[in-house]
Length: 314
Ligand SMILES: Nc1ncnc2c1ncn2[C@@H]1O[C@H](COP(=O)(O)OP(=O)(O)O)[C@@H](O)[C@H]1O
Ligand SMILES: [Mg+2]
Image (spheres, rainbow, N blue to C red):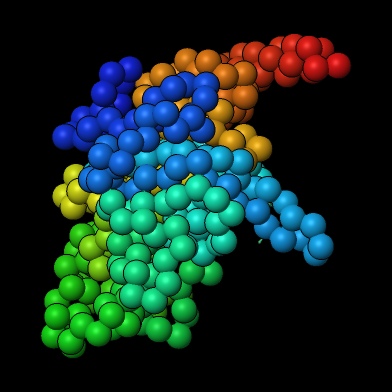
């Protein structure tokens, strides 16, 4: 396994540890000085997002703070509906922000429009969960990977060279460019989606459950590829997943989201092996392991925790 193998201590690489280290109050912004955040791939401070639901509003994010350094992978875990994708969308500029701020590479993009919005599109890319829905079946793989560059006005020759380089980077054969997505497996399609995300050399890729739809073996291959690409290019990842097991393989640091708040954050080794917050402990025990005996023991531990929590809240 070619993962960063993050232990209890700092991750490998040259990554500096940004602020927001307080384990139980990650929404605190005490550490968020303006001088600290210049070089971060992304710096999110006290972000509030409300969705309109008819006449009422629903608060999906309640003051979330998070930062990712250059070349760093930060995991965002939490159950379905906890607000993970909303944070990703807010960083991508795809949902309205009520308050708080987002900086990409030191630039405030919270309410980016026009040229600033187009720059944001180059700096932050996304890979979604669904390998079947995310590529246009009528476009060749070459056209799909080239599209972000063509939209940015790159010439034909530069585009062709960049597509060849990206396909090579995601370990697909050069002739993949002339074929259609329908000819590829789910794992290969995620590689195509990754090539497309990389082609404008972004600072940050939001990986929103990028391997959740794949079988376990393919998951490992795609995760290894993401790790290699990060080493080769220095791109940062926000790696969103409901599965702590996957996050453990790839992330340097991990933040845990629950009900629109970050309830715990810290080094991968700490959060994915000995979390302090009861919610994270439950997530950890819910994440599957290969060994059936260990799985049964974890299931019993999970039930004990759940029963204890239920009796303490009733
Ligand atoms: N466009 C929307 N309009 C209204 N509510 C939304 C919208 N998108 C998401 N939500 C709600 O916001 C909450 C967080 O959703 P989401 O960020 O997709 O969670 P996650 O990615 O962790 O599953 C959920 O309760 C969801 O129903
Ligand atoms: Mg989601």
